Image (tube, rainbow, N blue to C red; front, side):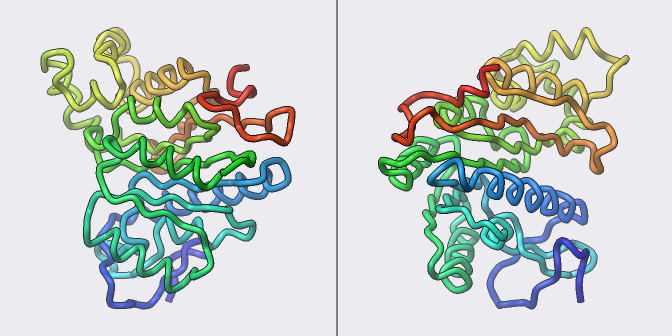
Length: 276
């Protein structure tokens, strides 16, 4: 039994596998593609390539309506052909992170992995500490995957904090359901009080919303605004791919190059390439 050639079904191992929608298969496929490209292209340029999953979950998911069980982003990242040298998994739910650690230790006993239990918005310091420990005195580049369930789950201050390390991001922006349903509600709230304010790290998205509606769709407008926020952190963005399915899957990318020497990453710096 299989779902797609890219994301095969796996048997039930008795551990939690939370339900997700059918669209999650596309998300997992994209993570698999991006992680593989990243790890392959950077393996001879950086001594350490570190995978970070901000909402790691249980390691397996059950597809709603079909009951098919598939591996989710942490296990997918562990299975790529050119392995990451370390993995950092953050998850707030007790049951899910316990299931994830059990699966990782069982299926990948030799894979270096750090498990951080807590809200990512309170734990980004611990993530940076884990990254520094994994890196040691060597060069390291991180690939950070963020798939928040809602705007409230991920603060822009968290991304800003993580961006002080050498790091590439794949951020899935939840504009599809929440953006379409609640944008008018958030727009009417007092500045600073809406989940979208903390997700964007500013309440000025309201001005963009008022200026661009109804000519521009909510999903495109919010994605472009987030991209502008990432540009302020000196990241590059290639624009919205309107052919993507689902359309809210948009990556914010920076493809860094190694520092000029083989020494450790300078603390508190970003990739030179990200500043172009």
